[in-house]
Length: 323
Length: 291
Image (cartoon, rainbow over all chains, first blue to last red; front, side):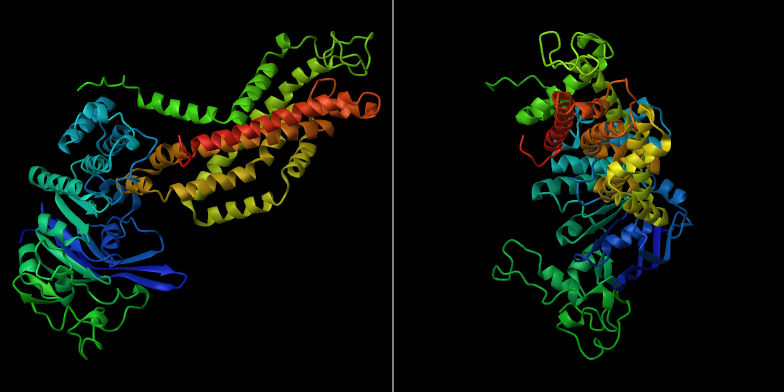
């Protein structure tokens, strides 16, 4: 494996709330190679967004972050505000879930991107302007010269998400973190955005961290997948390996819940019984035990550690296996 | 295709038209706008609008009833009431605008600092604001004016400072809400510095709220100026001001009640017009109202 671009080790995030500490992320480790697409999958509240936000210090001050996140030989966790600001948007940039609200309604979209360009690249106004038009072209916004002067409310959701992606790409970042980039869009638009991300990776060599709860999106785009459950990594493997040989019962459950045309479930989707445990009181046993068909005494008394079960395939389960 | 595409209207022009249409659909707002513009016009162009100079006496008509020469009658020195009301609008409008501008200039930066940076400073600012809000606006203004000494300038300063606490609270609340907006989070994630976030993302989005709030502060300051002048803490006679006129009318309430009625009406109508204008603007800027 080549030298990773971003290496996260033992990242834990705790939120101090009035009702005690909430462990949002527990000893998470990730490695992202240059121009790799890493999918992070899990249900709502499993800590996937928090993991990404914590890397750039974007969490509120109630969060305590421990561990390490190294990017280009420098530690990001605990770095100064001004240092982080030079990385945010310049080297690592974000695309958020909500294209409808992620653009300032009172500014023309072109100006908003221009702002990012000028913040980081020290370009004169004219050049920044040209860069914005170029970016609009890059993300396939038709008629860019006219679109740059429009306000967000004049653009559709898909167009706004393209604008957000253009903004994220403004300074040729090394890493693009896309947090549920297609969730708020309808299906045909989703496909367009995913095509765009794929194309950008191929053209610009940008590494992408794709955060989603949609396994279809991951299968479409990712090279490697991390499955998260209750703040921990449950399983990690290359995308083909994971889909062909899922080991963790949670992953198997997720795959069973993906609708497939002509599927073998008699038209009924398989669900995973029960709910995600509250992160306030992480149990001293496997967090998935109460929903797991394979749970036994060991599951109820110990926390499973990650171990390698197949080549380049780790899983945190006492009873891994495809069935 | 058979249809002709409508001439593309600029986005800004189109929005302005929609807002204008929303505004005109409210008759009260339209009438208020006319009154407000009229009052400002009277204040600015008093020299040309008023039939007489404010201190011009007519000893043939002391405490006169309305007549062709003096449309609203005269006071005990034979000064034309209409002319004095028109000239008096100057003090009211000046106090109303400059006090509001002053209050905004003080309150908005404080609100921004408190709401944006939070921390102990925010706690201090919020608590001090709460304490000051416990004083009614006029009590605070009267107290400050008494300390500063009587004059229109000092009355304006007192009113401006007294109007700060509620504006700080509103500005702070707005900032607290706006900093949670996705576009502010996105700007932070893109490495924007505080100046850009505040100047480009937060302040422009507060503007409509502040504008509406100004239309509430202006009439409060107009009434406040009248109160201070009435109490002798504002404009000093013989300079005309609605408050001064009310005060001067006191000894003649039984003989010439109109001396008190007209300036009183002027205060009520102008203050009401500003308030209704504010209501209209709020409806116009509220994105939830139908076009």
